[in-house]
Length: 613
Image (cartoon, rainbow, N blue to C red):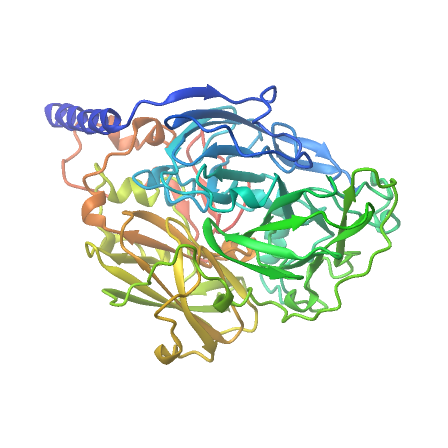
């Protein structure tokens, strides 16, 4: 047994060495708060990063901690990175390598996911608890090390454990393209985040949302925020609260005559937004890492997880103009039993576009007199790739994912895909089971792992999402962008409605209530990829599937030792008399299949948050 173990270790390190030797040499740059490229002020404009002769390594450190802040005037503990909310903007050029040290001082576990990045050959750095890694323990540092390859565009990073990102653990991630076809169409750039905000910590909200017999909907936010700033009516705050009336609004300062690229990210837990700037049309040039043929709109719907780059030209008289981010009330379902039903939420969230030289005062501008359809994405027929590329014409692997809600026997509500809520195995992620050294095959995964497996080399996948409830769901796929082939009412996809020529391409799509949406993508990225509704409360309730892509190829790919090292050890590993037969790792955890709660008996792991996560 010892000889066999030593041989396995030698083989593992040999494979790791082969991968490391295949990586090109990078020039290393250390980014930090003192470096202007590490943009810690989201209201400061910036220009694309200086180009380098070859890709370089950009090294960042995110220190996670709970910090008392008041984004909307109401003070609470916020889950922060480097003491700020939103978290620092991470930037790189196309082809650069990211080395990101995550120092966890939260007092609980964490992971970080890099939303929209494909993680080609590094699925184990995707940051999804229970799928691609174990949890980062409090008081430790974990390092993510990956390259985005040929990707460019607007992304974001956030916790992918419990609902921590709803408590503030999120920030922008930008990849500049030195060959951006629109580089000469704008002078400077801004990042803007849109988010909903709760005064109650997410752990408590999850417990209420998944309590037996609960008949309401998702928790109603207390405020909406533009780039971390909003305004709460402190007269509605509970007695004894620390609340400052008339909290500062988000203000973006522009110079008359300049053109600005705004990279807009909806990082909410649930709220979809309609975005506009009075008297300033929005020229859309990028959607979720894909350049498109420019289109101009006055108002823009942005669902959770979605991103757009728009060019705004400061060609008006020097003045102040309202930035409007309206939470679409019709998309937030409520009932008298809904958590926070008496919320003082102002659905009309505002900021200010202020020309240099304009007085420090509120705008008196009027909203665009234009109606757009609520709860829907921008018309996909308008989003044409630049340059174009065709969707798969032939499908080798086909799946249907039916979205439903149902309570368990004890009345706990779950969100289901094909009748099953996802329940993560936080001690033993899927990568550990299926990649090199794992002792399982995909068909051995439990039903509640919601695994959709395909292993066709150079094939193409078609996934039809069938939404059998009234709520819209913004579905996000890790590891890929997809072609939006078509959508329609009812529960039966209609291939005659498919766009087989030039469909929109993105990584997050809204599936309307009682409707279907069909997606396609090429099989070109072996890995374990989450596919889930990005309404965070629905993820907690189990609305997540995992795509297992090319398991035969994954079986030969090693996981770096530092990733496996954060998993709790299997007690049997220390027993030299164990039989050599493959076995399921249990790691001293029990999983309550009725509630989704995870209970740890291991002294290093004490789970204090979450349900499905």
